Length: 178
Image (cartoon, rainbow, N blue to C red; front, side):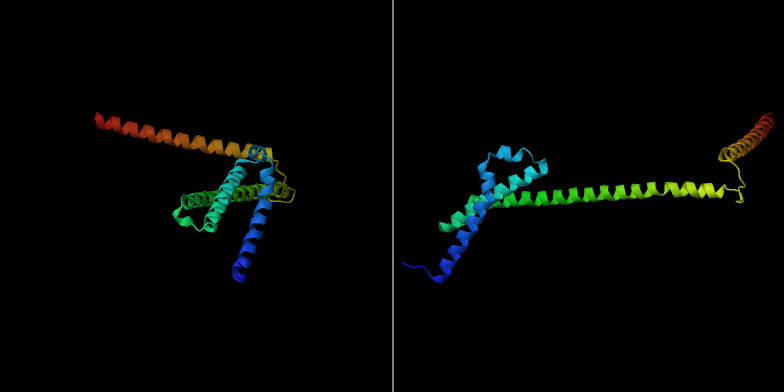
């Protein structure tokens, strides 16, 4: 009994696909799973576990089809849906993680760019204090001392004004009581 041409071609495609799956899975099947996972970080371990679960359930789904059974009525359909939800969760997690890495890189770029601006600011300050500028050679320490003295004088003057107003208000309140 010979097969129709379309069926023969489909069987050849299935055979080639299964050979490719076997070749892909071979490195994982040669070693114990713990040994394969020992050098992986948690995200890669999760990806590998989900990939294995999806592969095995898909292969069983295909097996059911080859046996003439309806895989959608079999519990493997529910399992495939569950594993697909984990695939989606891993994709979302990877996207968030990549976004965090991008944010960290951007923050590093901003900090690096800001650190590069420090030297030009110092040069500009030195040029402003140079002879012939409006500051005419005042040292930074002298300017700070003068600014500090002026600030202290303003503060003392404001304090004395405040006391005199308070004293006047106290005198007025005493007069109104008597």
